[in-house]
Each structure stands twice: as C-alpha cells, then as structure tokens.
Amino acid sequence: MLDIRNLTKRFGSFEAVTNVSISAPDGAFLVLLGPSGCGKTTLLRMLAGLELPSAGQIVFDGQTVSDGDRDWSVDPAKRNSGLVFQSYALWPHMSVRGNVEWPLKVMSMPKADRAARVREVLELLDIAPLADRYPNEISGGQQQRVAIARTIAPKPSVLLFDEPLSNLDAKLRVEMRTELMRLHRATGATTVYVTHDQIEAMTMATHVAVMNEGRVQQFGPPADLVDHPATAFVATFVGTPPKNVVPVVRNGAGYRVGGRHMTLSAPADHCLAMFRAENMTLSDREGGMTLPMELVETTAIAGRTMVTGLRDGLRLTAIVDRAPTARIGDTVQFRLPPEPDSWFGPDGERIG
Ligand SMILES: Nc1ncnc2c1ncn2[C@@H]1O[C@H](COP(=O)(O)OP(=O)(O)OP(=O)(O)O)[C@@H](O)[C@H]1O
Image (cartoon, rainbow, N blue to C red; front, top):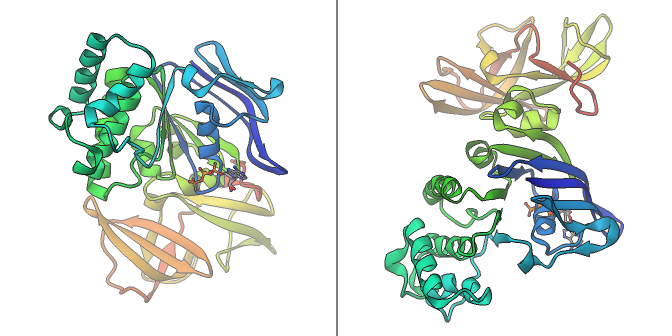
C-alpha cells in the first residue's frame, strides 16, 4: 500500500504541492498526470526521498518513509524504491552488464547471485545480447531499457518513473509503453509514473491522479475520469478527444453561450456546460443551438471524422459520421445537443 497523507511542499513562499492525499493498493500503476509546472515531479521526488515534504507523510507498506511535520525522511537508497528519469544517466565507462550489476554490488549481493539476477533482468528487458556493449554503442531506446533494468535489478517494492519515454520517438514510445506494462505485470511492483501525456496515462494506469497548480483535481481509475470528470479542468484534460466546456451566462430570460442567445435551463447564472464531442453535430442551417465557428482541423478516426472549430478563443470538437465538405478556414455551424452532459460552477467544480 502506498499512502500519501496531506502532503505539501513549499519552496520559500511558493507552494508547489498542496495538501495531496492519495492511497494506492499494492501492485497499482499510479499515474500522476498534469500540465507542465503542476507539481507532479516535485511529488515524485518526495516519494523518492530526494525532496523533504514541508508537511504531511509518505507511507510505504505501513512504514512512514517521509514526515514533513517532523522534518524527517528515510534516505533515498534505504526506502526500497527505484527511480527512472527521463535522461538515462548510465555510467559511460561501464558496460551494460556493469551498469545493471552496480546497484547489486552496492547492496553487497554475493557474486553468483548478482550474475544470475543481471541475466534475469537483461532477459526480461530483451537486452541480453547487448550485455558487453557500452552506453555509447547502443541506441537511446536501448539505453532507456538498460536504465530500467538497472532500477528493477534490486527488486524495489515501489518503482518511480519521471516521464521516462519523453526522449523517444513516437513509434518507440508506443512500443515502450507496452513493454513497461508487461514489466509491471512481471515484477508486481507498485509503480508511480509521471507524465503530461493523457493518452499514456489512460492506457497504462490502474489509478490516475490529475493534478493542476499543485493540487489533485481528481483521483480514480482512468474510466471514471473520462465518464465522470469531477472538474472542468479534468473534463478538458483527459479523454480522446477531450470534452467541450462552454461558458454559460444569464442573458434576460435565456443564456449567452459562445456569443449567442440560447434558451437553456442552467443551474446558475454563471456556469460551465460540458458537451461530449460525440453528442455534437454539424448543421447546414444557423439557429437554435448552433454556433458559427471557423473550421480549423478535421481528422479521420476509426471510420468517423473529428472536426474542430475555433471562435473568440472557444474551441469545439465534434465527432461526426460524414466529413464536412467545408474547407479549413470556412465557417461551419456546430450544433450543441439540447442538454449538456454535465454542469460545472464558475470555479470549475461539478454541480450537475
Ligand atoms: N527547487 C525548486 N525551487 C523553487 N521552485 C521550484 C523548485 N522545484 C520546482 N519548483 C516549482 O514548483 C512548480 C512545480 O514544479 P514541478 O517540476 O513539480 O512541475 P511538473 O508538473 O513536474 O512540470 P514539468 O512537467 O514541466 O516537469 C513549478 O512552478 C516549479 O517552478
């Protein structure tokens, strides 16, 4: 069990992580997902013991490993966790075998056991034929495999990954994603994985914590975040495509929506309406629930077409059966369904 309790991290007067509480069961694949600067790396560094919390506790398997309230933390090397960075940081003067063996030497594992364990992890990561090469003699993707092999060799009970795939090309990223999931099943280690890539999060995670400005916006299984986003931020950050969120403001007897007067029944004078892309349509005629938008993107997906329009900073995406005949730059009418899928307050919290 990984328990994060009321964790806060301040750098001077700036709060990078604010009162985060998360619990993940043994063997979970927990993804910390959020935009740049939201505090996910700081949270991961606290889990690794590289950063002392300002307040709150981190508990691995019932044992407190960091306590910000008591200014106390277990040394990074002694907390049974392993960290894989975005940069591989392999020892250049050591062979692949030497790199993977190094942490086992540090923990004084007997020589014969070391050799057996190195062989096992090299095979697990499919890099056994590279054992005698040096880091500058292998590709970036292979270096990342070596870095992962080196981290899992001592069998840490918690594995920590900081955007480990961000230096790889798109095809290799997808392959490594599958590999990491296989590795997770093979080792059973509780894994915490930081990324800003929501597709990566949604495909790999058993649990996702969506973060924004130092706070956890929502924590749960990926499907819950897509089906029941707790905040407008989560609605616009996860899912393919993300949901449409449109400001709605009272205007006489009706409401102003995307610069148009509409008759809706909104729960408050100022709120945000969420519409799923699959419930939006395109219309030949203006009027009712339509909004004129500049056509900015069309993409074929799985036999349907994803159409994106932009107007005065409002971006709408619809998934439709037939591709529009209009061209990029033309005005097209996006039709909203009569009722939104959800309502959020002006603060972004769900109200319906
Ligand atoms: N040592 C530090 N001193 C001062 N501020 C810091 C320090 N480390 C991080 N911060 C600030 O804390 C905030 C969160 O940083 P963090 O690296 O955790 O974000 P992130 O979500 O991982 O972003 P990215 O995806 O860009 O790495 C940022 O505003 C950052 O500038």
